Image (cartoon, rainbow over all chains, first blue to last red; front, side, top):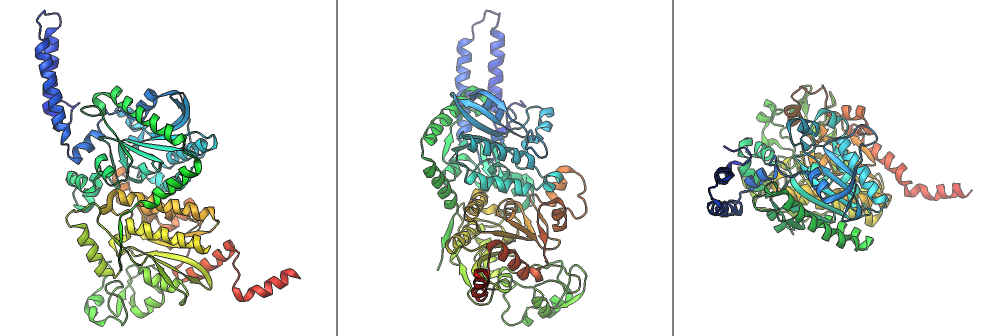
Length: 320
Length: 302
């Protein structure tokens, strides 16, 4: 089994390996296998299209959590110039699971926030697997206020399994840190653009996700609780996560259909991790276009539209 | 709840229900046993003490209506959003259908959903108060809870009165998935409007207040009050224990712990809630009882 591929991608992995072997055989041997290689490449593409055309919600969740998927800092470094990371909540600590700072997008200064997972074992521990603590949310709040004060648009990249469930996090009032951000973002007087790039894990994601425009990458997920958490509560069995993923409607297309997000950013064939540069380009186009639109929206209109959108959330009925 | 049911409850049975008591909403039987000190307690007395054990002070669960009925003055009460009921936008089904869970909760509690909101008076002071019905799907917050909470805030804005919320909730309602997550943002945003108008919000955290309710409006009070020993937190103790793989400290996430850590202003006994909240709100809103006004004005003019 090829560990760079998810279980449902194994047929693709096998074809790719064959292609690699043929390429290797071609090098320096004088044998021309170009035709065979391009035939197999076509077949691989076709197979990938087939597999990705009918991903189950649980498979989408696995793509969203793929260890090679581009993370917030990958987007930040690729899309922005003059990135200066700003650290700390000024009270307790700097939380590396939320990164934030100032940078330029197509020459325009903005404030950027993102949840950052780690790439290797060491970085994963350093980043706490992308699970922020209260000081992370309070750093985020400080930078939101900075954006408002200096009239800079705020761009957030969401990618977290959720806020960290730890002893210290509770002692420092994780609840309040999240709640405060929800309240402050709802009235932050600057355009806010949120993009779910991987995992949108519950309140921990929402705490940087109240925005004027909310986008999700095609294979990202966003949910009130992780599929495993939902399954362990409702089915008393975390192994039934695939069913929970299905029931909770966690994919971008489901949430778009229910008008809970504004836009889906398409991903390259096989997901963002198969063509990071391609994914970056697609995100860049959407960010730039939406930022341009939001920048030209009068502030009062922006604020009332954001509030009305928040108040419209919900599905209930009036009974007599 | 089930564990605290004594043989007395079982023997007395449901046929001995006191007149006017709501179905299953209040513990049944004439006698019951305190889960904390094991004292045998007379039901009628517990109703007088607002479900607080007269022997040891243990705060037992109380229904939303019983709480609001006691908290607000008997006259001038008007329910807000009484006609809003839940929907099943996702056709959610786990081991059971969400619609079936709703029906069962509704028939068990006689409520449409987990939050009750009332406009009324507290010792003459006009205000809006809401309370969670924990026995309705663990007081979980879905679209109805969010909408009713906001309508409560809107009534405060309309009448220029303070808001009080008694929370008791396991968190967001999974069966409404992202719809329920977004209620956290909706309710918190509404409180921003209340703050803008200079109207106070007092959040009373009762046992238990967890997850999405704790991580939104319940932690945004101008004054944060908790009932004794209430469990309050973002993540549940079991989840934390599994994550950090160590035993949690004694009293972790209890009201007394939160007071020590600076998360709440005070712990108030349920039986003192009316007086204490009136006193606090009267100061915050410069409220003077109507009959005292002429004299005060005269005294000031002099």
